[in-house]
Image (cartoon, rainbow, N blue to C red; front, side, top):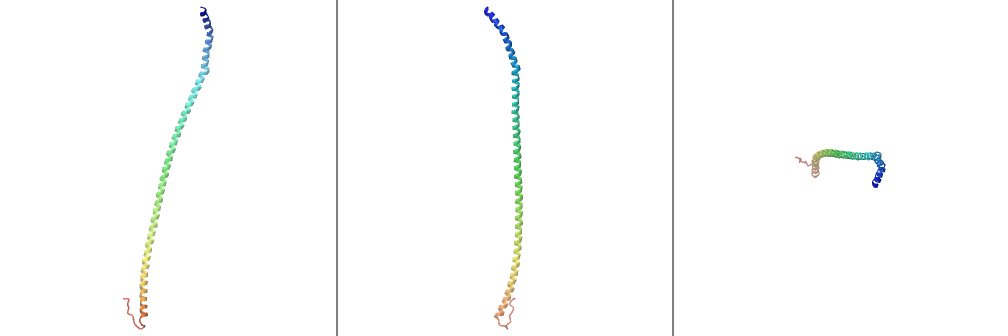
Length: 154
């Protein structure tokens, strides 16, 4: 029985320690664990918020990049279309200039042909007159001075 009485004394002596231990656990929960959990939850929320914000910024940047690339493609297509129109316009101008040059060359050729033909006619007339004159001079030189020349021109 002595053991029971010693055990009862120890148990009775342990009651203030147990109460102190329970108060220590309650104080730990109030003073340390709850603020720590709040701080960790807040940090987690901020971290997740920052991650979500970063994801949103990445998505916005990708959207802007896509829009920029689309605008760039459109600008390139427009530039190519403008270049093609300019090339067509220059080609048309070149063709028109070539046509004008050909037309002028044809006119000059026709004019030169006409001049050559008229010069040929004039030259033939001069040659024929000169031939007739030379023929008369030759006949006069060959025949005696008093002989009459029958007209050969007929």
